[in-house]
Image 1 (cartoon, rainbow, N blue to C red):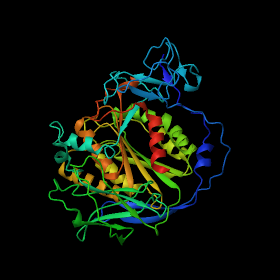
Image 2: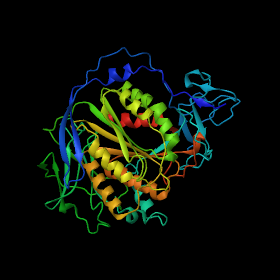
Image 3: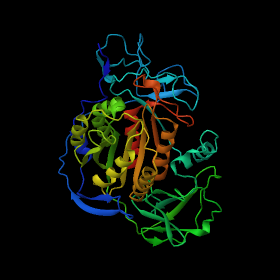
Image 4: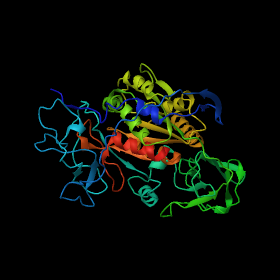
Length: 478
């Protein structure tokens, strides 16, 4: 008898999403990454979303052992939102013989989270069971943001075990100019074009995120930058030259220096956001695809519940050369059910060797998905368990695509699955750093799927992957 979990709040009406995501029509962009400069085609999209009554919301506690007499230590890992029961057959307290368990039916007196004993900065000590059996809602994950932990990141790159990773992938995220564009009331302004100039040349271009932040990298693909001088650089904000004196952030700084730019003319964009899921669909990705099939609707509904931002979703699945297909996609839609239907028809198959067509997937995500150029936020979850092919033309393609993701203000949030090695981990972290994203990695704490390597990060919390994705969507769209 197979054991499985029903997804949290799976019975919520899709009307919740419609109620939260009503919005005006928006222009969309198709980005041609075959050109040196991105070619942007404007397309119109509109939605006719009727409002619906919002039912009572189920609440998941994210407090650590709030009803338990034992408090976790500083080095304990906390998994919010999962209740434990006695007589458990697994670390999540599921009694033997249960055909299915909904979180809403667990013992109300049980603690609202589980503490996994472990060393600070590492995931739990449990090992994956090597099974592809799906346990809906229980994949566990953590997040680590290198931009928020700059000193840790630069020290990591000086570590004897990792110093060669930048040169291996030809990504050198070590020096940058960080900018925050605000209005007269010091509120961050989203979707503002920011260009970093080195003399008369554009060194890096991007757009501000929902908090007004933009990260402009210096010599991202050019190797070690030496003798950097702030006076050599300047900024253009929405095409207007800024006269502000800049502060650089280099690998010798303990934290990132923020250059605050007041733009009284910039307008706040309409509250709309695009969220795409770029997924490795080769044979080893069965657990992760099953997760999306069962939890995608919950993730989007949950993220939309308390948000005034209208969400569109899209999905793109990819494999490798000589497989049944290279990429296939479902373009952005106001109705998450369209994306859910597409995802539900996908299976994990193909592959064979370790690397996959990551570069082709990124190119297709830029060319085939109609990103809304006027949105306040654009997010791409990149879910995979294998690196790109290590070939010169592939690395050049990765550099070009990441440049365009950043230029068009699309944050990449990698989700590293079982099978990811250290080279792949750093490739993914280079992607999220360059685009202002953050790094997500699955952990062994769920006991589901294959073994996951310990990420080279500091102290971190472990939580259900679905809830972590909800939290990140909310963080970057509101």
